[in-house]
Structures are given as C-alpha cells and as structure tokens.
Image 1 (tube, one colour):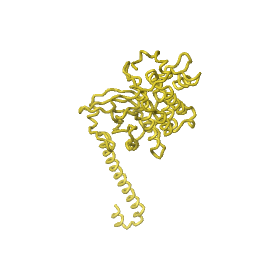
Image 2 (cartoon, helix red, strand yellow; image 1 turned 90 degrees about the horizontal axis):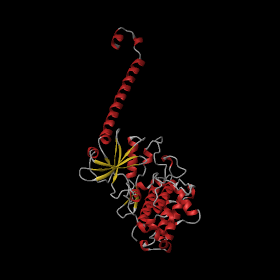
Image 3 (cartoon, helix red, strand yellow; image 1 turned 180 degrees about the vertical axis):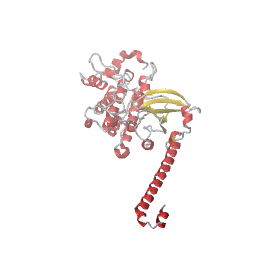
Image 4 (cartoon, one colour; image 1 turned 90 degrees about the vertical axis):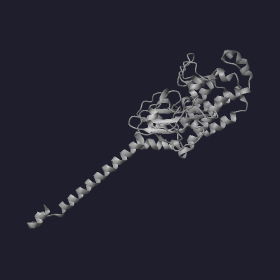
Amino acid sequence: MVDNMRRNGDQKTVTVPKRKAVRTSIKQQINQVTAYLKNTQLRKKEKSVFDDKIVFIEGCNLAFDLQDLLSASAERLGQGTFGYTYGAQLKNGQTIVVKRLREVSVSRVGFEQQMNLLGDIKHENVVTPRAFHFSKDYKFILYDHYKQGSVSDMLHGRSEGNRIDLNWENRLKIAIGTARGITHIHTECGGNLKHGNIKASNIFLNSQEYGCISGLGLGKLISPTAPPFMWIAGYAAPEVMDPGKVSQASDVYSFGVLLLELLTGNSPMNYRGDCEYEIDNFVRWVHLMVFNEGLDVEVFDAHIFRYHNIGKLEQILEIGMSCVARIPEHRPKMSDVVKMMENARAPNEDFEYSLMSELCSSDYEDDGER
C-alpha cells in the first residue's frame, strides 16, 4: 500500500506517525505474547511443583507422593482452630499427621514462604512441619506422628476412660519443655515471632518426655474474616479477640492456662463452671480457689496432690497465676518463666511427701496406689 502511494507521487499520504504507530502496535503485541507465554510457563511450573506433589521441607527424610497420601487409611484425630487433623497410615506402614487447613487466605508463594520459615526453626521442644501441599482442592501440612497423642489426650482422654495418669514429674517435664519451646520461638525473627495457639492439644512429648509445642505460625495463613471456632475459648488472653492479633504476652497467658490445667487436671476448653460460686471461667475459678480464703488444696488434681510437697505445687501455681495476669505488661517473659520453673524443680520429687498430703490422703483412697 505504501509503495503504491509513492509511485503515484502522493507524498502527503505517506506519514511517519502512521509507520511509527504500526511499529508500536506490533511491539505491544510481541510483548503481550511474550508475557502470556512466560505466565503460561510459570503456571505449568507451579502446577508441577504444587498441584501434583508434596513439597518436603529441607532435611526431611520422608518419601511418598500425593497419591500415596490420598489413598492412605486415615483416622480423624480432631478438629482444631484452623482445620481438621488426621493420622494417616501409608502403605509402607508409616504414620504421619496431616492437618488440612480451611479458610486459607495467602497465595501459594506466601504459603511456601511461611512453611520454609517454620521449617528452619530447629529446637527439641518445637514441632515444625515436615512437608506441605498446596492446590485448589487441598491445603495440607504434614507433621511427625506421636504415638502417645497430645497432652490433652493424656490428661482428659480422647474417649471415655482413655486418659493417662500423669504423675507430677511427667507434668513438670511437659511444662518445662513447652516453656523452653515457646521461649525459643520468641527469639526467632529478630525476637518478633509469636505462636498464637498454645493449648494442650498442641503439646506432645519428645523422646525425653519433655513437652514440645506444635501448631506454630498457622494464624498467618488463615483469613482474618474466618470464624473463630473454638480458638477464643479457654486459652486466649482477654485482650485478644482474633488469631491475627496475638502477641508474645498473649502466648504467656495461654501457657499460664496450660500450667493451671496440668495442676488442676481440668480442661479450660470443657470447663462447665462451679455451681456453688457461679463461676463459668476456668481461670476465674482457679483464682477463687487460690485467693478467696487462702489456698484451697482441692484446686490440685488428686492424682498429683497426694504424692508431693504442697510447697512445690504452690510455687508452680504461683508461676501460673502470674502468667494469667489480666494486664499484659504484668505478665513475665517466657525466658523468666523457664528460670522460675527450673528453680522450683527439686530432685526425686516423686518420693517427697508432706504432712498435708498425708492428712488428706484418705479423701483419695480410690484414686490409685501410692
């Protein structure tokens, strides 16, 4: 068309702007096609990494694929704050814990970044993810399986008559180990990391039978508009109204509730209230038992009270009460909690008796052997 114009001598019809406009348009088209191809390749790459595979955290020695996991026999272990938890037995006999998340609000990239951040935390009292899977249909996090179950299972039983009688040394090791794990978490990310979901069902026993804390960092993955489910009940600090607004001070409060749970044997999640005093809150009930008219020894679980020096139990109780102070600034740091608990611990506590325990032992004759 341009050549015909030149042969006819019509120079005015041949303009540079038109040619420039054509060249610009072609360049835009080339860029659009290039971007499309690049995005297509990225999507294919993401799909090959995420949609059809399990991504293992560095250092993990597990080896199986998504189909192996989906075809595994599974037992539902519980429903928690962020989703359902299953025990999955693979065809090779290996059992792993699978947490299927709901209401996930972050992108694949954000999910992977959070998993890698958590996977880098190495401490004997912190349970971290071993692998994960992210796709449109499934968001899984995989953890090691603990045969004994959680501390909640041990204290209260997953079914009627299925609880384990934990002695005082067991409970103290659970508390100290958990406190060490939370203290380590609070030192990560420049001292700004929080757990945000501390409760007995997230505590397990390591090989030395010390407590180790699981469920770290899941609050960052969940939509802030998601319903709170059971998260608010029992363990949450009074100043916290949603999982996205936790702090290290609220972690201390939640640990304090756990410590009171170990001492009393009562579950904060299922506390039904005290009819005599019309108390419907677990922490307020403990406070009443401790401060109303002097310490009421019935606050302690009979399974530990009859065996131990009441003074030692009182020391740990005082630590727990300091952790559940209503004003966040009045609560101790987790590092200080660890020091106080280790100082209160004495050797051979299982064989120490107090006069008070002996005098009250007749009340618990049917609770087990001495």
